[in-house]
Length: 155
Image 1 (cartoon, rainbow, N blue to C red):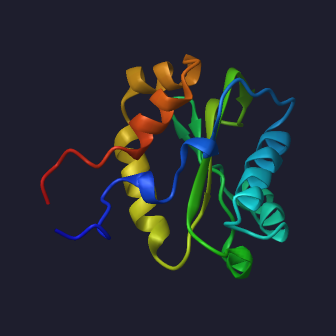
Image 2 (image 1 turned 60 degrees about the horizontal axis):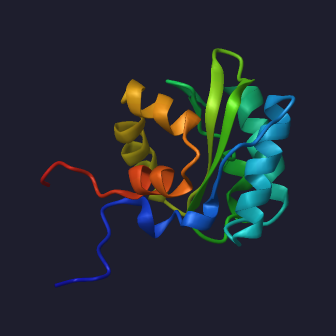
Image 3 (image 1 turned 45 degrees about the horizontal axis):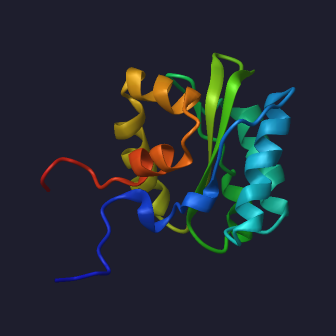
């Protein structure tokens, strides 16, 4: 039995990293808030947040189903201390260019961790009905449980 193996996102997301009922007047404001959550949890240093905004100027991080996944550009990797994700829920939505984001999942990843984290998030967040529930729930535990659950497939 190897306790160090965690196939879910529970290793990079804590309940404290899920914030419900947020509001923002702009995408930049939402990115700054997600970035501040990553800074507060110790995953990144403050300059990483500018890298998150720069990434958005290059290519949208809107995934669809009301979800955006802001993260830094390659040039901001030096500001990452540890892999982590944070979730900010915007029940009223934030204009995210190609769509409206109700869940903003800030990401900082060391090395190749971003591939694992992104693929797990994409698998969970492709469920449109679940995304609608996550966007409107008042239960942070529900959001945490859905996003931190281990993948259901057998590897």
